[in-house]
Length: 355
Ligand SMILES: [Ca+2]
Image (cartoon, rainbow, N blue to C red; front, side, top):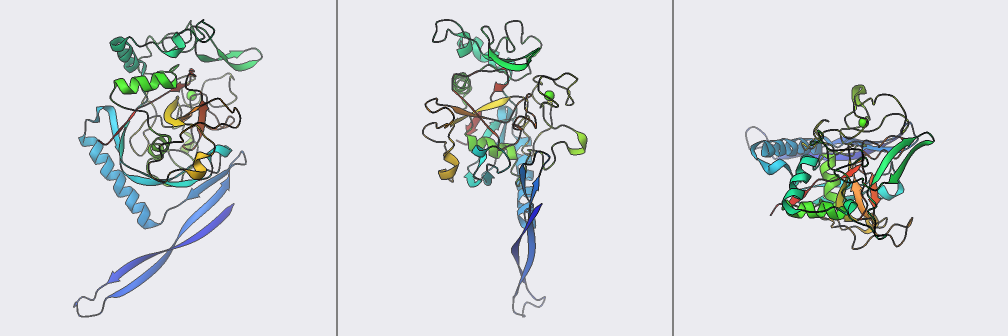
């Protein structure tokens, strides 16, 4: 454990009761403690307890946001106020670093992930056909990717007939699962829905800012501990992937949106349930030279692991995320996928600019 003590000073102006005495300025020092802890996997978690004035500012901002959102119908959207955050992390994959400060203008974001019910309404009105339902380059319908457990273990495979209506393969259905997040939608499908709804996808920075709830640097959306009081605050995976036994959090697959605890901005499932597409291209270089105010994402994709394959970013982790596969439910965790990619753990939510 490493601990850094960072001095701050707060200024107080004291005026004598008579008003005749000279004003005295007192500088009271206090400390903001920054602690680094290695978790059970040996990863470095970075915590910062902000100074009291900053904590008060954050508290006020959250109260104002709650008041605004309780007064506003919002169309299922939540107002995220103008502010700043330190984006990224040093505890996860290399592409989450370097941590860098970003300022965001206020924006609206969906309280919940887009559901099967909502996507069905869009398809009915527009007769839209998703990528996974269309013939691929080979001329046959390739379908989306599904996660299957076989004798030799668990694996991902592309399955003809796997699409948003049959999210886990041709034998599956969304009947009775209207409130679950829609999946098997590729990036282009998500953009098409957003345009129909008069919205857009959130940028990667907006998504992380909304997920963090305006809070200080925390490894999880809800705070410091993975399972506070032994409870899971996100639909994730516990134990070995593909293993047997009931899920500790109550869901082996996708959960109806809104089942799990709200974050501090009043948003559901910003950790776990399904990964969510963002507007941005994926690049391992962008954090090193990112725009500091309202970063729009890089102009083009760069993934050194697969040069020449453009990819978009998804965020938030899914019901298949666990401590053993990157803990995708951490607010800084990033997933990369080609825009035409669709899978049973990948959905989205929409955003909207102030004006
Ligand atoms: Ca689960």
